[in-house]
Image 1 (cartoon, helix red, strand yellow):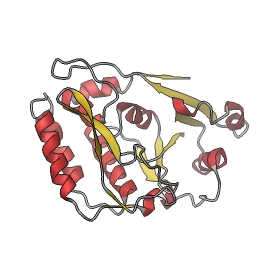
Image 2 (tube, rainbow, N blue to C red):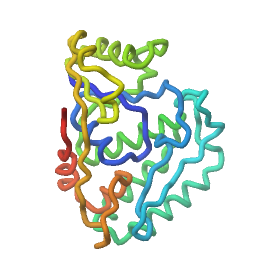
Image 3 (tube, rainbow, N blue to C red):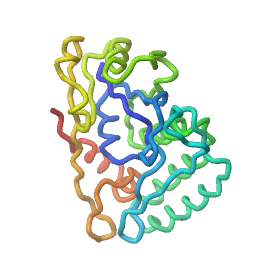
Image 4 (cartoon, helix red, strand yellow):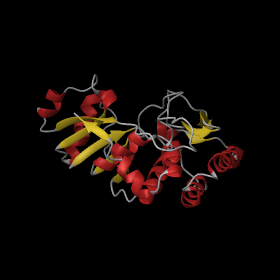
Length: 232
């Protein structure tokens, strides 16, 4: 069993999907504290050749609340506005006709909380890309929220009988390979390579939402881009 654990992000960049694609089970850490101004409810798309930040409005969001405790704002007018922005920005992209219906499906979902909304979007895009990794929210299975940091990660590995745990490169300073090896778990770090692709013939803007990748690349091309990473 190869395992990864990440906070739920809405329409994250391709590195997130590279990690999702390389593991057997992907745990969404939805019972940890929300991070203000993070990427749980925000990301960037391409608008007029430049990165443009979008945000999902939330109801009483706070770093003192768990992700699964935070609902979307009652006013859903932002959804229509965001759909129009995406349509106007990408309607001439080569994969628009294939991808926009998937996006509209996601936007039409009524979530229980922001983590659930992120989960639904991840599942739908994974299906579009034929990624078969199982995606599970941490709050529904493990019941070990009293544990902290590395201790909790290792406990989830134990429960899942994971032999390998893969973390994004940013965790290099957080986790020690020796600590994992002592528990019989191989720890690896994934470093994404943001390979350029055509964006209306303009200068490539890297690291945008997966939505941008999908609009400019067919499924086969995206599956190839999912392999552009390094494991260490």
